[in-house]
Amino acid sequence: MPLERFEIDPAHSVVEFLVQHLVVSRVRGMFTRFRGSLLLDDEDLGKSSVEACVETASVNTNERDRDAHLRSPDFFDTERFPEMCFTSAHVDVLGDRHLAVVGELTMHGVTREIVLDTTYGGRVRDPWDGERVGFEATATLDRRDFGLVWNAALDAGNVLVGNTVEIDIEVEAVRVGRPEPAAAVRLP
Image: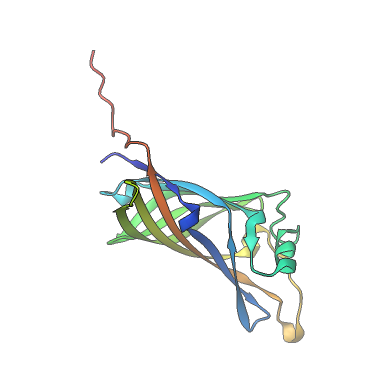
């Protein structure tokens, strides 16, 4: 089957994160502006790929002062690094609709390999005669691996912000164009 191109629909997708705060709780945040595309082979998901970028200045934790601090050079440094991007290298099929999407995440000028534990939700025809697919993906990373090292010491040796960040992504994507043929045959 030929690869089909899908564009992420930001109105029906979300990119969220969780990080420990003051040792006793976790803070949830999200990014409100992002884009991306998938090349999907529905019959062999292992042949699929994804590229996506998030605008770092769109960080939103529902707290204006904290969001301003996250945009500053202490964290995302959004003026120097306006985007963080993920490009898949390969997709491993782990089971029925369960995938490991392995690729490179570039954030804060640092590129590291991460694995997105992914579930393919399937394909559906929408009311506007289009086709949509859905995916859920999670990952855990250490923010220090990307140069995000700012912290503040608390009593008893604890720190203000945890280093482990949990990523939670929900994607709905819309098929665009026609499928590309696997190979074009040219006659003399």
